[in-house]
Image (cartoon, rainbow, N blue to C red; front, side, top):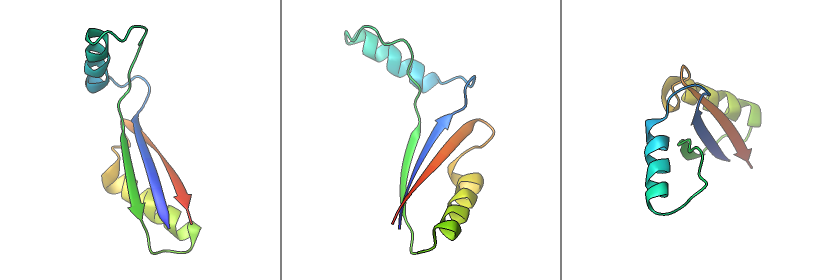
Length: 80
């Protein structure tokens, strides 16, 4: 089973990397970019066949290591 995890900063949390990307795009001539928010994307292959167990395991991984849940949100997509 493949899991796709998207991790993004919560609203209101400053994003200096996003700001740097927006500035670089502006300097390269890409007009009209109002805001950039930068995040993480992680793929994990799991041996589990049970979606409920896999989801619980992935939530634990995110809470303990992959995401800083104080300042970040995450979403998990599971594909069989």
